[in-house]
Amino acid sequence: MVVTAERTPLYDEHVRLGAQMTNFGGWVMPLQYSSIREEHRAVREAVGLFDLSHMGELRVKDEGLAQHVVTRDLAHLRPGRVQYALLCNEQGGIIDDVLVYAVADGGYLLVVNAGNQDGDFDWIQAHASSPSGGGQGSIPSPSGGGQIREPRCGKASVSGGGSVLNVGREWALIGVQGPRAAGLVQRLTTSELGGVKYYAFIEGSVAGVACVISRTGYTGEDGFELFCGNVDAAKLWRTLLEEGRSDSIRPAGLGARDTLRLEAGMRLYGNDMDLNTNPFEAGLDWTLSLDKDFIGRDAVLRARERGLERRLVGLKMLDRSIPRHGYPVLDGGRRVGAVTSGNVSFTLGHNIAMAYLPPQLAAPGTPLGVEVRGTAAPAEVVPMPFYKRPHPK
Amino acid sequence: MPDLSGLRFAETHEWVAKDGETATVGITEYAQSQLGDVIYLELPTVGQRLEAGARLGVIESVKAASDLYSPVGGEVSEVNQDLKDHPEYVNQDPYGKGWVIKLRAVKDNPKLLDQKAYDEFVQGQSHS
Image (cartoon, rainbow over all chains, first blue to last red; front, side, top):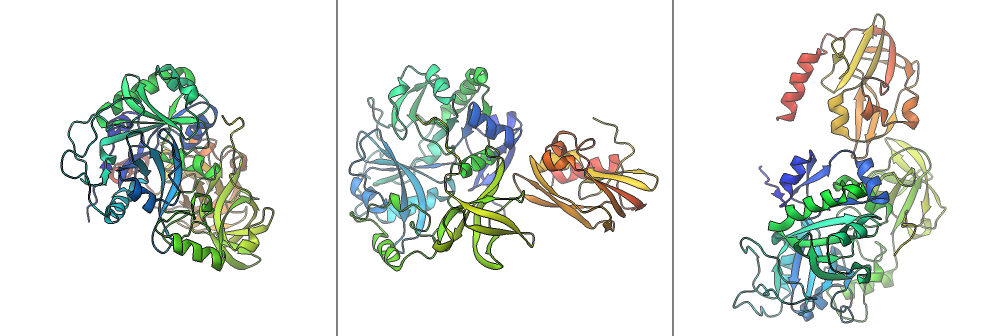
């Protein structure tokens, strides 16, 4: 079987920088450039640059449709604001976790996980009651400020002609993350970024490239995610690397992205949650607006009534063993759960994990073991996130 | 690059430097580059006997846990204690301060590769 992994518009940049590439969610992505440890440290202490162009972007213009498929009430999400939310199936299982951008000219942009983008698109498309707006050019034309327009691109290969558009393959996404990220991006734009709060976005120009400038991230640090057209991606990437030299910028791969998000207690779809996980178990019930109707609401309510059988909790290892996905969690000699994500925490200096455990074992301080190659390594339950940045903005 | 002409290599990417009846074992530059940042090693105890090709321990990088194999038979005479606090030595200096164990009463393993043969083996691997 030959599986062709897709390349982002920054593929050549990664190769030029000597990155080790890996397949992730059907995409060839940089795993690391030099050292995961050093890339991790750069994001915590200075600034790191990420290619996130594998992420999917779905334009859902029909507000009713968006409300129907997304777990969180979007009615009060003002244009220019972003919310974290879930897509659930009728059984209340998690299809994906997404960022919802409220767009000024109506509707929403959903930023979805790379490996789920086509599935999410099909799912939402299937729930579109009437395929509206499919007649003429379905890409909104470039327009004034405060609106997301489709970025300029060589050719339109946007799928879907109705109330959902899959624009992910036309958009590049570059993450600029770390305490020096805001200063760096500010030097490259005339937009005033001080007013762009966490989980807000504006449209502007960065390094002469038309971008959506979003104050979001998956690292636990301050920073921006910049959406631009594929054709402009390399220019933006290179300019950020060049201008960021004085900030000790480093390109950072998926390895560091994973160790950073784990410290920040952020779930990874496919590891820490999937179709067999309900939002309560995953600790994501805060994304449920149970007073509105959405797909999976009834199932989620039933799950709440039944009560939790397991919960996602944080574990701190008390020795140097490395907990990894799938390792059993032990209480005494009894298997009580399994690790979903685990690794070294470079920032904290010990090893950490997320694991599903029975609620009665979820209290911080509970002593447990993680089975590592046949031996129970000592661990204890700790609150998540494991790491919080010192001075949140 | 250090002089590797006296070393022998296993296809599982360990090196061995023999000195009479004793030997020092580590992992190769290629292995450390593939593993990435080493964060933990699980090593045998002194006195343990190892056959050639036997599992001698586990090396964990940020990416994954991998088994280590002894390229020659012998008895463990020393383990590199510095790696407990500085597993990154394996990345920084795999043929020097990143050595892993020392063996005594070493038995030869005729299947090991010399440097040229190992380099060719690695070339073949990275193009496969």
